[in-house]
Image (cartoon, rainbow, N blue to C red; front, side, top):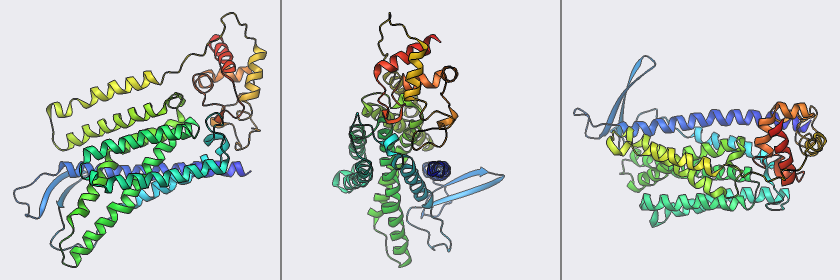
Length: 393
């Protein structure tokens, strides 16, 4: 019964996570567009950096940006922060419900590292905290003043974290943890830097003092990182549903390509919002497309060899399926952590296997995503037999 309620918790937390992520990313992308689309108007006050007109929902909107603040602070000032906070809280809660509660199934892979549940969860929590301190420390060093150099170093840390996670957790959990690490940086930027700095600026203005310009520079630095890291994080969060993304051995290569692709796509939109034209907004999609094709080719699974003269009988496949699949994929699962067959896929007979042959092939032959964490120790030979049978039936 506990597994049943944990599945409800997973569903509701995932729903909340998607809702809050939409709100956060939506407002973030909107303000990036707004900031880059501002234009200086002839009649604007000197204190106004730029303004933008837009139309939506049957009305017209006129937005003006003050680099420091207006002459008189408004009574009501809207802050955009809770979208970020609740995205992280709901995401971390989902991580706990899925990967900590089901650590032996989803987090731990004994063939990678034979960890106890306590060790695995501790490494997960510790890495998220340590990752923030490393990232935050880099940003605060003199290197942080050069956004390009800092960007290269941050990119290197992300790729290195992918390699480290792949040496500790299951490949599925490793890729998700890279996304969780970067998402922690992004929310940490909002919670520890952007919002506190903005509050300090407002407080200075209310006291009639000139704000410290470095506060705005620090906030801009972190906001830029959040802008370019959003798309890669989304990919990594979705990846656990697609085994071809984590089937390869060198996970860091996939992460390196995904982060690069996401950053290039964001650069296209940023440049376009700023009014750029010509080559400045023409190179991104061809390069990103080429990298996506490279990624897909690199992630292609390696064929499992099998003696062409070996005769595969139905009973061989029945034994493999009953040993490695039916524990979870049954009308009444016997595997701990499952109160119902995942995604409604029941694999109790060969007819069931044929019905879901594409999914079975993708999850258990083309990759080693199933059984999760390879708890039942399914061998390469068994995967080859199952694959050959699926190809011929």
